[in-house]
Length: 269
Image 1 (cartoon, rainbow, N blue to C red):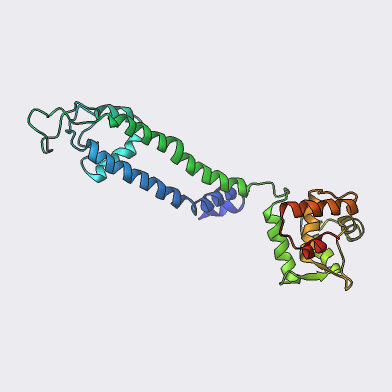
Image 2: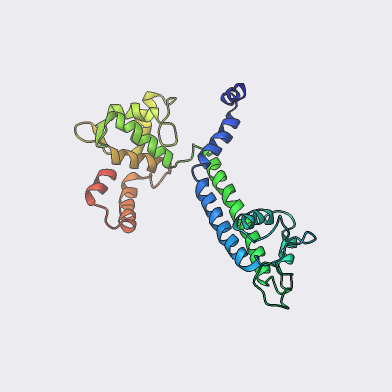
């Protein structure tokens, strides 16, 4: 338990541990895919190589064989590591058949199949280059998300904006423009102003530069505010605003043909 307490002091260790925890949510699906591949290959191996005799001087012996399903699965686990090619060669045609198998007299050396080459190489390729990389991809995806540069504008900023806006207006309609200044100073850049931004600078420079429409009752709408923040952060046609607004209207209509004129009037003054 003392070792667990050390996790609170090491940010890097916490990030790695949290990455592992988040990855566990997706790893069961990868594990299910692995189980399906092992099941299919084990059944094919039993049907194709299950009659080979067990000889201690070969790679098909009492420990490595396809005569039962558990043994076939265990052998496939072994085949993902070293010496899998020896098992493949021991399963080629011309091998001694098991005395209890159904073979005709004089055909005791007819067990095995050329399918062993395709069988083992394809299985090794799937396990070595696909399945293992799936595990790594899931873990790296979560690690990249947890260690990403949060200063880059992304969906997480939208979630933060919606959450803080709901404190003033749960219906995402409109709030007072004075509350908007307080709201934007609570949101860190690049979407918001940040708590270090002086109140005067936030009002006179940042909000005016956003060219955001203000209603007659001193209220600002959710859509217009979010659009202006994203537009300003990404510097999308912000100078001069009057000309850029008309061009931006045409671009939005071209990309999203079903955009309502009322929404365009709301976000583009």
